[in-house]
Length: 175
Image: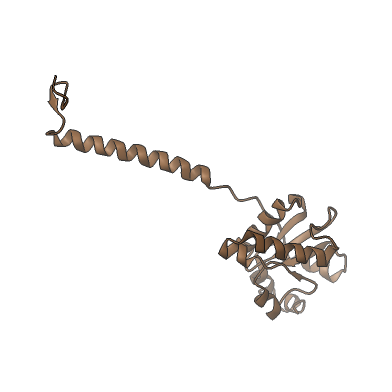
């Protein structure tokens, strides 16, 4: 039996059979690659939020319920930040993929706030970023990796944008 024949069909001359073979191989490759990509994409850690009204009340009452970590770029923190907040810039981690630098900045901020670079187990942390999304998510992920419990980490809902849009009562609590 000639090797190029399969069941009496000349595989090399049958264009539709060649096309079907190529399509089958490509589809198998796409499925296999798609499964690997899905396995490689870790799901984001869930975030919990604190409303700007609740954070404002905590600040005004001097209750100290939250340690406020501003995780925006240090330049933006220096321009304007919520009273009593501490800079924990995670830009290098969020935009540049340098998690070590983001973690280092958070540890410095936590040490300034609590005396311990890993914070303390009885504190609640309010993260302030631009809009309550990517920078806060990165800071949450890094803090969880540092061993801080998820139930201690809150994100200011809407971030600094929502705070600034809150009117004069909120703008009065900016430095």
